Image (cartoon, rainbow, N blue to C red; front, side, top):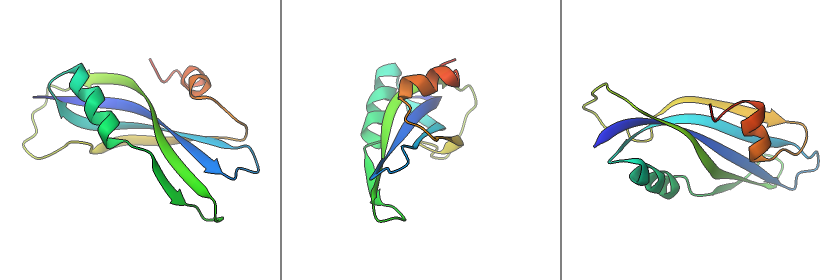
Length: 110
């Protein structure tokens, strides 16, 4: 199996959302996989919707949106590195945004 760096986009949905805000998260994780199909399968199995009660008594759900980039690493690591996060940033907005708008606005797919 090869080691990959996988850049993902996650989306937060808040209910109720009185101020129409929207938050996305761009994150990079490490993953051992046999190839592209295996990467997508593992990502979809790992990043299932996560819903929890938020600070104001509503519900927040984080959902997987898309794989933005995949890069094969040439370094060798002996320990388990699957889904170790190596980078993350939140992208909050004061208005409704779609994942496509965020990807284009921040050139996340480049």
